[in-house]
Every structure is written in structure tokens, then in C-alpha cells.
Amino acid sequence: MTGKDSRLKMIKRLLKSDKISSQEDLLLKLNTEGFNVTQATLSRDLKNLNVCRISDGLHGYYFSLPEDSGFQNIQTEHLRDLARGMISLSFSNNIGVIKTHIGHANTVAFAIDTLKFDEVLGTIAGDDTIFFIVKENSNIEKIINQFQEIVPGLEVK
Image (tube, rainbow, N blue to C red):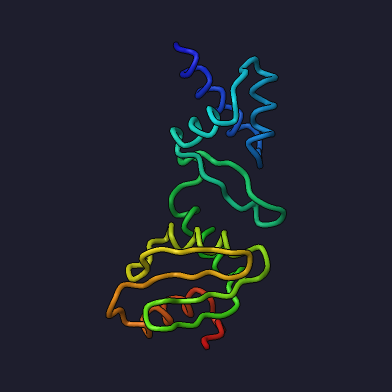
């Protein structure tokens, strides 16, 4: 087994045995296990393993392996992120603007990108605002309805 293979195996073991919330924590645990790697190498390893971050529902996010989280759980978490973060939605032609609670814009934008809304081409997030572009000639009412199904009571301006 190569150094990389044993390191990937150790990362899997660590992620399965503990809820690790940051790359810094994971680097420290790897170091304790005798693996001295850089943050860049760890970042590539996490991408190679398709590691994602999942909300713990209370305090933040932790790393999870795809086989541990399951697609349905990830999708459910993204839907929850939308429901928790979105405040309002408005459009000007094919540009949408979403207002979020402070600090939620990146999470909501990531959820929109990951859930792959058919009409949305991409998102740009700030701290409490998201701009997104929809395909030309899209049915804006359909998009509004999709968001309102996920976020009942969503304010539409």
C-alpha cells in the first residue's frame, strides 16, 4: 500500500469514527496518526474521496463520506439549508435576488447549485444576498413556485 493509499484509508477511518468539522482538526488527527501532510494535500484527498460537509442540525457542519451520508440525506440537508436561510426572492428579467439571514448566503447558494434547479445557471453569494442567473425565457412563476414549495411563506417581491 502506498503512502497515499494508507493516508486515504486513515482519513476514512477518522471521518467514520469522529465528527470532524474542519480541515485543521483533521490535519491534527492525521499528524497524531503519523501522517504529516499539507492543507493543500488534504484538500485534494478530501475531493478525491468525495467528502462533503453535512449540517449536524445544531452547531455547524462536519465532514462525511458519501457512503455514510447517502444522497437522500445530503439532498434533505440542502433543502433544510434553503428553508433555514432564505428570507425573500425577487427577479429582474433573468436575474434573481435572494435575501438570506446574515451568514447564510453561501450555504443557500451552495444548496441551490447542488440541487440543480433546471432553470438556474449559477449563483453568486455575498453575506446575506445571492444573485442568480436563470436561463433566458424561463418561467419565473415556475421558479418562484419551486422555492415556495421548499420555503413556505417565502416573501416574493
